[in-house]
Image 1 (cartoon, protein in one colour):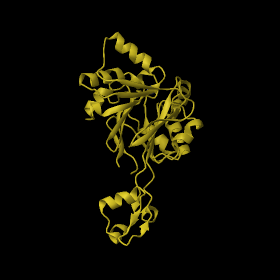
Image 2: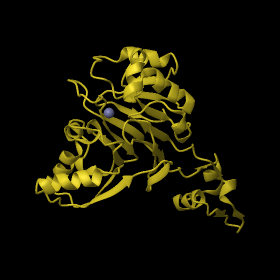
Image 3: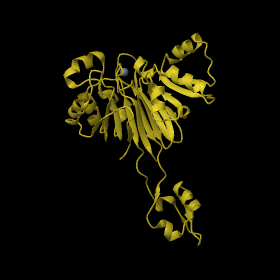
Image 4: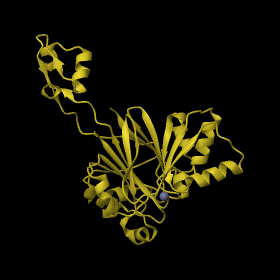
Length: 305
Ligand SMILES: [Zn+2]
């Protein structure tokens, strides 16, 4: 099962010539969901050849403009392109009022339903579960209510033990029954339980998105052992005093979060426009957490390699 992230924007509040504001598409075995929708997101969706109508579930971390000002434009384009399927919007409380007012004021009547799932929680909660994944949310530490997201793929079916297929001359239908736990009955009428014929599949892959936020121990248990952690890296460590004042992450705090969470890999994002290139931020993070990468617009990163 493929699980990868496409970065549409990795700039902080100000876009630059090479970085747009926050947005990314998570793809799990062909299912797309959108996380954050900064200004220009729909242009990036076009640029990186993602199907405009493929995203029925949109997750917004918080109601600062660089994370959701692209939403009205994206939804309007979906309407203009004839969408009829509903779009689910998972966002902090207040999003319904903002979008309702905006569309009413402009006289727009969308051709599809917007289904609001307003988030207001102090505890981690399950927001969505479908055949491909579960999406959990949990509070971060920023200047307005802000939420992180944990996306966990659904477990795969177990694998057959080696030699089993040949020994019993299994058909594809037999194999499916065994994998879903129904066992197998031999030609002689002997029943063999699935547990004797299978070995567990690999653990489900997990991706966490924490932006914008300070590093704080409170949310580390919710992102434990993720395959990839995407974390706010607005500043380098020499500007920690500004990061603390504005409640943002730094290269060092992002690396500390990845280490504390026992993540397999760290992806830095949300870079201040003051950085033309972010190599020095990656180098700083690597001193604490070696398996660190910097996001860039158009990056496609696969989990679990
Ligand atoms: Zn931001």
